[in-house]
Image (cartoon, rainbow, N blue to C red; front, side, top):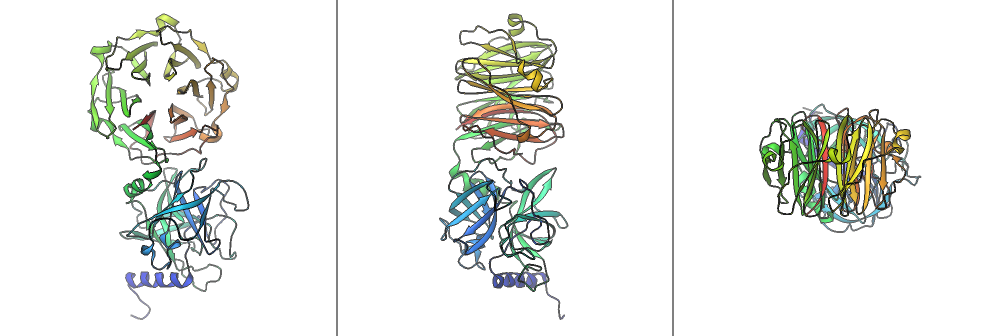
Length: 547
């Protein structure tokens, strides 16, 4: 029996070693023997300076105003992390986020002003004094790690030859035991300064946070004679509800509502003003089955999210998600609006107290309005009024002031028209400036921010551009959005205004959903991706809501 200890005894010994060594560190994609992270990679990692150099830890950006890290970083006795009280940290704490090279100036520097610790594990949420933008957060997993799973990490801790590194390092790990609140990891050593670091995994090309580094043997770290490299990280996959509830204090009533059609159905999610995504819900399970859904659209009025979908019978259906999360059942609109044989595309916008619908059916464009009492008129033939657009493939619409803006992709070109408050129309106008800069158009989406019309347009080979039409009718120069959203071909796109900011979402040909927003100061957020989408996405629709 000499030299053999049970798992329980081993874990206790591990914790004891950690306490003697001081505040621990957590994984990095190679914290000790690995490479320094490339600029922009693992930008969600944060360097924590606690008490002006008294302690150093690593954290993870969860959303635009909250980090997650280890309670032991802030506890008076790191061996007793569950004693950490909620509230402002005792020592002034600075977080440097998105700066893989600490000698540089990229990223953001914020003060931590509030702590919300867990009572059952070495974990704490840390509120930043002001939000950060332009840095993609790392979303928590919703499923537990499994034994043998490959994991990664990123931390600012000590390496095998550097006492206080200036760069973020990354490392590879393997999960070797999963317990109720922790996961054992082995591989690259975890050193001082890595405590609280993200332990994450690749989910279909997206990273998600699986755990947070807590304790380690520190084998291979500078100043340590230990040879063992095992470590313990704190699981986060089972506390998503707690995270959302704890961080909700910084959220506003504004939300981005999103519908996604996939090869398995129609699903809904929402993104709050913190940047957190809700879990996807099955729309037809909540609002009734309408058969196979090819495309959907939505618009919100007073927090009520109106959902329109083309059902398996090619009829148009209307349902609604109420502010309390319940659903009004889908109803077939054919009797109210009239039939539209050959209906393939729809778009909808809030006109203030009512709704405006645009449809594409048998190559023609149609328009409809719903008044404040929920009554629809019969379809009006826009094509008859404005002329035929050959080979139309997509429609989009948005309200700016009292005008309804309409966009159509036809013959691989982008066209625009306006329906005025008195019911009259302007003629089709082609966005000819795109011909030279973008080439053949495949997708287009509108969103109104005040009296400005914001437009995103894509081509079939991955080009994507953004432009603005001012209230006086002049168009600004279109700018390239591929540095933000990438150059993968886009199969679907939509846009919305949320609290005065322009947001857009794309579905790429390889099945990813990418989101970004444009702030009032004209800067763009780094592309973000909601995870755990049921099935492979095929089309997307978004709208802004307030409740």
